Image 1 (cartoon, rainbow, N blue to C red):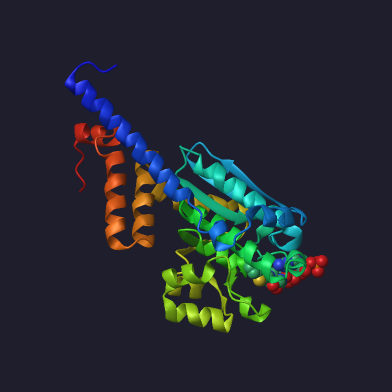
Image 2: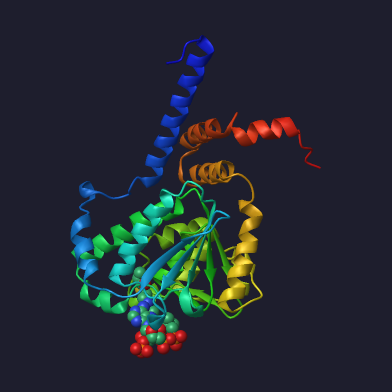
Length: 307
Ligand SMILES: CCC(=O)SCCNC(=O)CCNC(=O)[C@H](O)C(C)(C)COP(=O)(O)OP(=O)(O)OC[C@H]1O[C@@H](n2cnc3c(N)ncnc32)[C@H](O)[C@@H]1OP(=O)(O)O
């Protein structure tokens, strides 16, 4: 039990901080869709379970960078039903990773992802299953985007359809020579449904997004760079070299204490998603988690000059 007024104030402050951190975590995990939207999660999970194959693997490195691998190279890393389910599980794992600072998503076998597995798509081509799958993937990719990790899609080979959409759920895209991003949905008689259109507009603006979706244009690294869809064209095309380059690129932004890097991502997510007043309030809450924290106090002692 705290005895002095100072101890009571500190204890109160710690409780408040803990409550704020828990509230921030809840806000990140909040799903877009629930039963009130006609979303039947258990039903779609059972359906997706029937279309097995491939995997989504996660390794967490000591430097705070997670590597998420889309692993179904026989089908150009197309998303089977079980891969959609595994993606949700890996996102939950990442939400609980307190030391994480960055994330690289890439595809096995030198290619990114060819969207949803067309065999599964054919089997769930009725409207109830389609809507449920769409809401399932939007929920998962929104949670992925809101992770307090700086995320990068490493695009080798092809990112097609849902694969192109997945790249937009990352903060940044890096492309290797000869790779391409292509929203082919129009040729499938579709529009993006995994949140790719809304996010694409946010990244490249509505005019460019309209051109990319209505033209189903093939975007090479140079065009993607010009549009601001890609940050950089890497020099390596092979998996090991490209991953090494992506790690080096990302470490330029993830160096430093996890609490601060995660807070940076939180305030940017707020600015990206919320109306300005709500974003300012969220920024205030996040600021409260770092102000007077260990990194802040150490910096005050060091008094670094930012020349
Ligand atoms: C969210 C909604 C969506 O995602 S709609 C978009 C769905 N995706 C597609 O329509 C992509 C269809 N695939 C393709 O256009 C080509 O396979 C792409 C990705 C361009 C790759 O071409 P290429 O490098 O020549 O390889 P390939 O065609 O020989 O493919 C190798 C094997 O993989 C298969 N594959 C590829 N993509 C998928 C997919 N999405 N679903 C199921 N299977 C797929 C190919 O059929 C091929 O298999 P196989 O060797 O013929 O048995």
